[in-house]
Image (cartoon, rainbow, N blue to C red; front, side, top):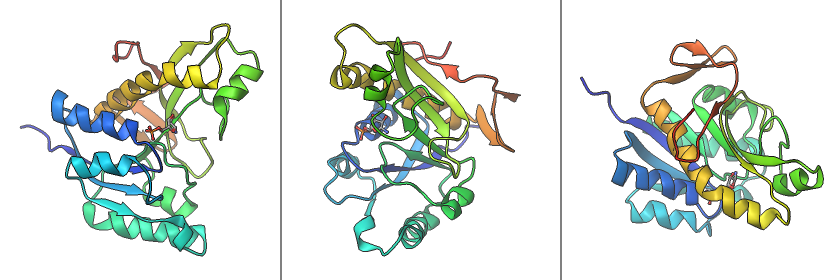
Length: 221
Ligand code: GRF
């Protein structure tokens, strides 16, 4: 019997190009994902347009309207509660989620981060890689835990840093690969091939020893 499409919420703050990649994969490539809600913490996030165009319900829950993190988190949880969400994808969501939120969705929430974690948690990742003289950079998808960008890494894509590169050129080269990484990683959840248990990521029933590495054609090694 065919499994039901995985019910997911996507949280965004900005452009939403990764959200768009997921929507396209659902519409054109048969990704077995049901994006039941998009949440943005910024009313002016251009990514909201992608959701509306696809007929996905949108909740704008602006952090500026709440006195603190706890009450803002509670409002997001309340918005997601009726949706029976199986996976939350943080795709350019620029807010830190508090402990209660991360506990509620433990093992069911992933974040896309533009660095080869555990290197360069936080912001300004490309410049930090450039300043360190790194030979490569990339993007990671990890399970969200209470620590910032600290949960176990599921998957990565890598690109070389070339002479003359700056943050903009790296972002431009990495962007399309990030989209492939998000789609391929979410697909593993849709196929129930990855799960998180007691602090570890399992892939096809075995604990993952190192992150799955995405080839530039969008499949895993
Ligand atoms: C991506 O670069 C992602 O790595 C980072 O924020 C960006 C999101 O872009 N977390 P978009 O809003 O999906 O276009």
